[in-house]
Amino acid sequence: MDAGTISIIWLVVLAILLVIEFLTLGLTTVWFAGGALVAFLVSLAGGPLWLQLLLFIAVSVEIGRASC
Image (cartoon, rainbow, N blue to C red):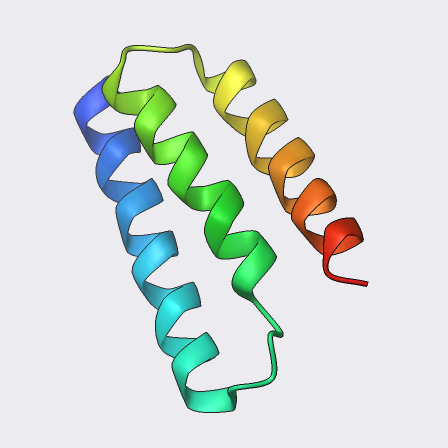
């Protein structure tokens, strides 16, 4: 997969998570949406896939911990 395709995938994941969040209104996916946003931005900057995945997980976990 090329970098453009990966960026589009992150953008779609972000959009799906935000739609789920708006439908549930229970902060069920907001931390994953934050992680997807960071991964999307890293992919636009040309970061490698391993870094995108690592930041997606790290940001998602950190936002989840901060919201508890």
